[in-house]
Length: 107
View 1 (cartoon, one colour):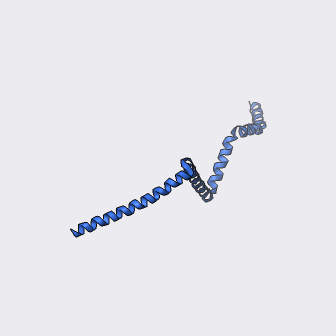
View 2: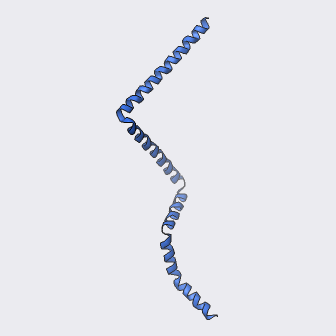
View 3: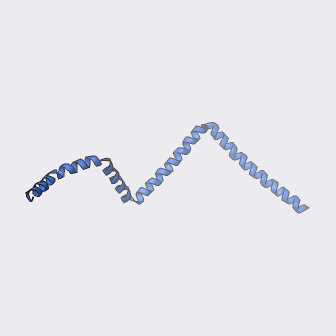
């Protein structure tokens, strides 16, 4: 019976220690919420996550600069595609007219 009583006492001590740790954490959280409010905690957490994502993006960009350069180039080409097509058409117009002239001479 002594072993069982010792086990019960050890279990109670462990429970009490866990409860004390929980109460301390809960008290700190409650004080923080009262100080900053829920919106402040959410804003802080959001900013922290955004900083982590930005840091990860910077690390990827530093590891693969060619991919980043290619992506930026592709985006710029896509954004200015109509302007580029217009310029290319204007630049090739004399060549196309010359080809038409040569084609009509051989007919």
